Structure formats: structure tokens, C-alpha cells
Amino acid sequence: MSATATTTDLRLLSNEIKQRALVEGFAKVGIVRAEPLTHEREHLEEWLTRGYHGDMKWMARDPHKRTDPRELFPAARSVVVVALNYYTPHTHSNDTDSGKVSRYAWGDDYHDVMTEKLRALLSSLQQQEPCLEGKICVDIQPMMDKAWAARAGLGWIGKHSNLITRELGSWLFIGELLLNIDLEYDSEPVEDHCGSCTLCLEACPTNAISEPYVVDSTRCISYGTIEVRDERLPEIVEDNLENWLYGCDICQDVCPWNRFEQPTSERRFEPRPGNVSAKLSDILELTPETYAERFRRSAMKRTKLSGLQRNARALLTDSHASN
Image 1 (tube, one colour):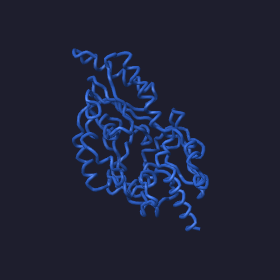
Image 2: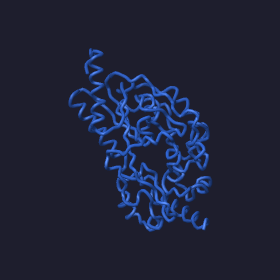
Image 3: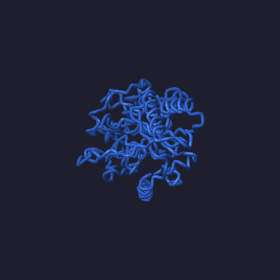
Image 4: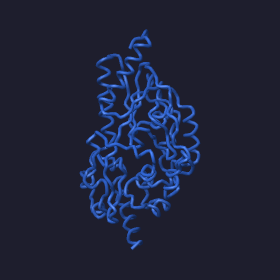
């Protein structure tokens, strides 16, 4: 896009980007200027000061880099923000010999799926605009995904700190494409529609949502079962697992906006065998080799074999204590 591009040119290219994103299977897309997230950085720094990041030390490294996309891609002038629906209509087993797995990890690793789609989007744009350069961001890069999604008008950040959309609820993965060109920007944020609802705060068994819109990760079941590398789970988590082996969806399960959930069209998010509810005995019998084979290209490899087996032992101990 030349330096003399007209407003009409910018609008046409922006619309083209959005249409191509939808063709790639993304459910929502918005475009905003690549600039520092000043207000969001203040909230991040306050959250870090409280120690709510726990063992996730990388969250505290260089907050300015996490809140300015130009630190990742100096040429960035625009941020294309996309959301991908991952909801599939399956339910957990009530069998206490099985452990529940968070919905986001049922199918193939979302990092791979999102990256592939964003790479295809970038490639198609570069065929049209040879001078265009971009950087793909999918969770691994230090981008404040939910903040960018809210700024781009995809939805609002709910009291459980997840992005909520009126059309699909909150079962969404978020990614960004940083581009070195100016575009027409979305300037209308979505109004917060949580209202007086506090179901997510009330349902959390560990009171990890310390106040509306603020999550204390050190009390969160997802954090404990996935991020903590200790031999034992944090006591508050271990005492309130409610049969979660990997992650937790309680705050999203009770959210009224998720009554608008719709099955994803991405078949790679369909559950792998044993990934909705995993037999605890099977988990404890895994060897490094069988673990690597079973969870290849799965988000569940995040917790590592030792963590997954630790979680399984905690669930079995809790089950036996209840009998």
C-alpha cells in the first residue's frame, strides 16, 4: 500500500482482510492501530504487584514489551485481531475414575491451528500487496490477546477475565497479525454486558476471581493443574479440584452468554479419544514414550507427564477420601 493511499483504498483493503479472515474460518475479526496499551498496562502492573501471576515469571518480564506490539515487530502499524470458535457439543463423564479436561484442550493444539490459518491469511495478503510484511502472534508471543480483542471490538472482557462475544459466548481462541501498513480502524468497543451478574465469581470453588475482572492465578484450578511444576498442587487447588485433571471451565460453564455457543466448523477441535474425560489409571500408566505419542500436537502436553500424573494422583486420593 503506497504512502499516497486514499481513504477508499484503506477501506477496501481493510474489508478485503476481514473477508479473507472469515474465509480462513475465523469467527470474528477487527483491525486497530498498533500503539501502546497504556490503560491496560496499568492494570497489568497492578496485577503483577499483587503477585497474582504466581510461578508464571515470564508475565513479569518487560511489561512494556507485552503492551506495545512495536516491541515485537518494529514496523507494525496495524493489528488484525481474530477469534476462532472452538466449541464442540460434548460433555464430561461423571465417572470419578476419570478426570475432566478443559474444553480448549480436547482437540489438536490451538497454537498449530491458529498459526496455520494466520499464515495462510498473511500469505494471501502478500500476494496482493508484495511490500506487505507481518508477524503472526498466537498466545506464545507476549501480546495481551484479550485486551487487543476488546479494543478491536470483538467483544468485552467479562468478570471472569475471558473475552465474551454476544454471538458465540466465550469459547474462543484469539490471535493477531501485525502488519506494516496503515488500514481503516475499528473504533467502537463493545459495551460490557455482564451487568449485575456474578455467577462466575460465585461458582469458582477456590474464589480465584478475587473481584470482578480480576483473577488470582495462584488460586485458580487451571493455573494449578497446568502451570505449577511442584510435586504437590497448591493446597487451595488440591482441596477443590472438583474432578478437574487438566484446566477448568467452571467460570465459563456458568456464564449466561455461553447459551449462544455454536459448534465450531474446525474439525481439528473435535475431541481426541480420552481427552474429554481421561481415565486416571491410564494417565498413571503412561511412560515418557506413550505420553509423547498420545499428546503429540495437543495442548495437554503443556503440563508435562509429571504434572499430569500428579493431578491424577490428587484426584484419586480425593475420590478415595470421599468413599
